[in-house]
Image (cartoon, rainbow, N blue to C red; front, side, top):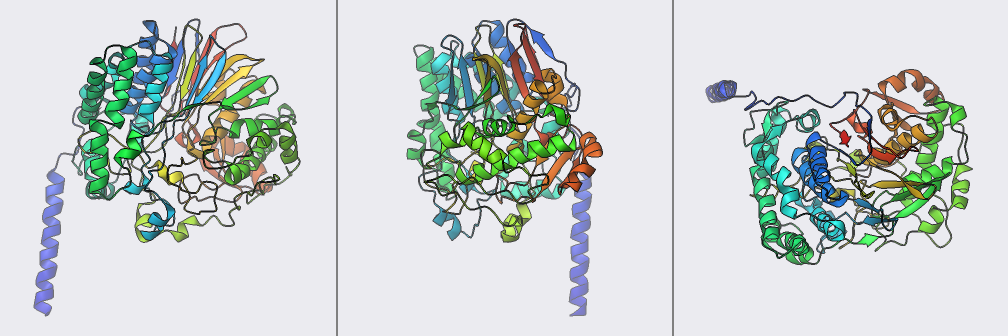
Length: 622
C-alpha cells in the first residue's frame, strides 16, 4: 500500500509538473496591440456647441452618432447607430440584444415619451420552477436568468417613430468594428480581468462565452489595448442589415429587422439554445414580444420637471427624492459636507424604502404612482428625516388601499446561497451598463441606458448575449418584484429628460445599478444648487448609499452603509460616522459610482455636454 501511495504521489506530482511546464510555454501576451489613449480616470473637457451633440459610453459610439448627425440624420438615427456601436465596443456591459430603456423628446410636438426597454420573463418561468431547482434567488450564471430580449424591439420602434436613414447605414460602424476590431479599453479590461482559475472555469461553464471573449484561450489574459474582434456578432448584424436592404423602403426595412430577429433565423437559434439547455424561452415568447410607448413618470423640483421611464425601471426615484429635498435649504449645508451628504442620503433611503415596497411592472402591480409623486406625500416623507442615520431602511409610506412589500430585517443574504451560488457570487463576466444621449440639430433628443452582461450562455454562432436580467426579480411571491410569467423585473437602468420652465433643458443617464439614480441626483444638485457647469458637476466626488437591498440577487445590503470616493471620504467620513453611518472608502472616480453623460441647453441657447471621467465616456458635437 505504501509503495502504491508513493507511486501515486509521484505520478500526480509529475502530471502537475508537466502541466506547469506546458502552461509556461503557452503564449500569454497580447495578440495584436493597437494604439489607443484611455479616457478612463482622465479629466474630460466641457463641450460647447451650437448645432448638435452626443455623449456615449465609448468614443467609437460617440463618433458613430456624430457622423450620423453630420449628414443630417435625426437623434433617433444617431441613437441607433451609437447603441449598436456600444453593443460592440462595450458589449461586455451593454449587450445586443439586452435591455435598453429609452426616453425621446420630439421638438416639433414638445412631447416627451418613454419606451419600455426591458424584456419580459418567458411564459414558462415561475417561482416554482426556480425553487424546484433549489434556487432561493435568481442565479447569475444560469440560462434561467435570461429575459426575452428587448433592445432590437426598442431600436425598431425608435426608427419607425423618427428614423430617416437605412438600418444598414446605421449598423455599418458597429459591423466594421466587430469585424476589424478595436483596442480593449480600461473599463473593458477591468470587466474581463479574470484570474487563471476564472478563465478555466468560464471555459467549462460557458464555453461559447469563453470563445467570444477569450478566443478559446483560457491561458491568455485580456490585455489592455489588444485588438478585440467579434466576428460572429458582425455576422449577425450583417444579416439584419441584409434583411433590411431587401425591403422596399426604410420603414419596411426596419420591420424586416424586427421580424428577422423575433420570428426568423435569430429566433430559431435562441429557441434551439433554450431547448438544448432546458431553458425557458419559446418561439411564442419571441414572436409575441413587444415593448410600447408610454407616458413617462414625472415630478418637479422648483422650475425643473423630471421625466423618466415607467415603474418597470427605477425612473420614479429622481423625482421622488428631489421632491423630498425641495423643502430644504441644501446650499446652506455646504457642498458635500457631512450634513449635506446625510440629508440627501436620507431622502434617497426614504424613496428606496418605497421603491422596495411599491415599484414594479404596472402591468402586474397596482402602483400608487399618483400618491408617490405628489408634493403632499413628499412632505410626509420629509418629516421622517432625522439627525442620525436610519440604519435599516425606514418603513415605506402607508398608502390607504395598498399593502407594501415587507421591509428586510437582515443584510446577510449570502448566508442563504447554495454552494454553486456561493462559488460564483463574485464572478463577474462584465458588469455595469452604458449610456448614450443625443441632441440633434432639429432640437430632438434621445437618451438610452443599455445593459446586460455575458454571465449566462450566449447563443452559439451569433455573438448574442441575452444577459441575466431576470436576476432582478424576487422569488418571494409576496414581494412587489416577484417573478411571474410575462412580467418585467424592475430593472435598475433608466433614462431621464429634464425640462426647465416648461421647455426642454437636459438629457442624461448613467450606468451603476442602484447607484444610477443616486449619481444623477448628485450631478443635478451640483448644477442647480451649487452652480457648477455640467462637466464640473459630473466630475465632482460622489457618495453611495448601500442601505437598500441590492436590486441584483442575492439582494445584499449594509444597514447604514455609505460608500464614498476617496477625496470625499477623507473630509466627510468622520462626521458621517458620528451620525451612525458605516462608511467605506473607494478610489476617486471609481466606476461603481456611475459614468454620467449629459447634454443640456444653457440660458444662452448654446449646447453643453459633459462626460464622466470614471469611464470611457466621451462628449462631442458641433
